[in-house]
Length: 290
Image 1 (cartoon, one colour):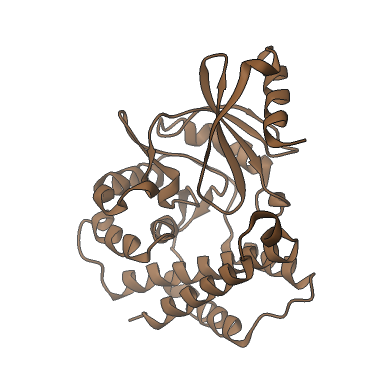
Image 2 (tube, rainbow, N blue to C red; image 1 turned 120 degrees about the vertical axis):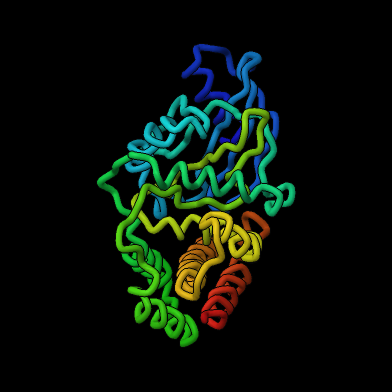
């Protein structure tokens, strides 16, 4: 069943309408894991997320279901209408606006910093940790199952991260978004919004700041002093770069896995090349440490 028919079938049942009352308006771009569409349901607009192939290896939908009400309580995200924890498909209310990735993120640093502080300083509690290194181990196991051997360069970067873990892991963690890249910030008439809370959990707030540099790490470098309201010292500079190196190793494994399960051919994206780009970026982060 193609995506349009799938969406029409599920939404018709959920909203008690005929499939012809549901139409696809457009697909929203951004990220490597999901297909997200804007849909019209009898004159009302919603978003509909269909996870990509085997996306459940990277996201625990029960954890997402726990975190969504917490995130929505902040008033900075769209409301969830339906989440199927078995399939990962999600219907949400559509927020009219423009993804920050379609413009210049550097023009919105104060708003981004204020919104991230609202998340990080919120009195929201979760028993669920993002657990970065345990997560990385799981991702590595996924590609090793396809007889992949990580390169010496990969191991050298990971060794540096492990050796310097105390240098960049926060003494205490906070509630974090976990995927705060520009494509998940939406510029609206009601202010800046933050969507897609799939990777939420307790983590170092610098993780979110580093993730803002997903398109261009200069964005994260520019965001840090705005977030801190002063220039970062060498330790803070390194903390940001080490987290980004970690993220690049993480997405290196995700890209390799997507290549191994045939998504390069299905989507027309060379995921092995993408994996190599992420490894190069991780290397550059290590080289830029002070």
